Length: 83
Image: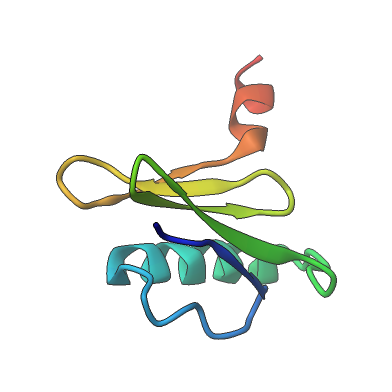
């Protein structure tokens, strides 16, 4: 059984997190910083779905690995922008 965890935006990600997910988390955080989004009270949540890691930011952004091991980012604002 794998337990999830939480960490603050800008903090070091858990060491057991796959490197592709760590890189994607950093990219999301860099984009938020470039947009001057106040993430001081935000955090990431690591959970496992069917044994596969998934991270979710407090704003609803989620990151998971695809079958090839590449990080896939889902931004909750993407759907709103398409309308």
